[in-house]
Image 1 (cartoon, one colour):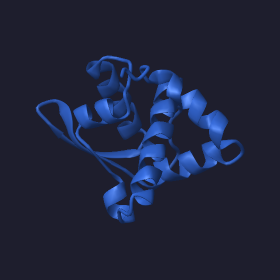
Image 2 (image 1 turned 120 degrees about the vertical axis):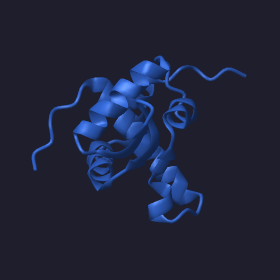
Image 3 (image 1 turned 45 degrees about the horizontal axis):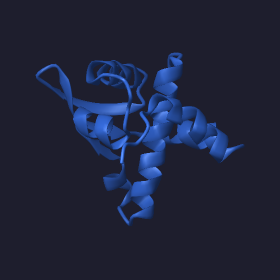
Image 4 (image 1 turned 45 degrees about the vertical axis):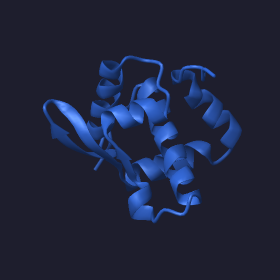
Length: 115
């Protein structure tokens, strides 16, 4: 199965979700549990996405259509988002040469943290 091209912002969200997956693993979660990203609001807030919730939903839809995410939909929103192996492979390949540069590139869709 060939996956469609992704927009830059969808690619960045995929990298950020991969980074969260790796953090979940580092925190001791099983691989299966680490793949669970929770609801749309959870993804939007945990990853600190600077775009609107609707824009984040569009990116999740794009990644879902490209088979990078398994999503349970309810009331026209992403109720439960799980990353799958295609996203993990994408993340591994994207950061293979330069982890820091890949994460800095992906972080351009996040808002600055406020203290």
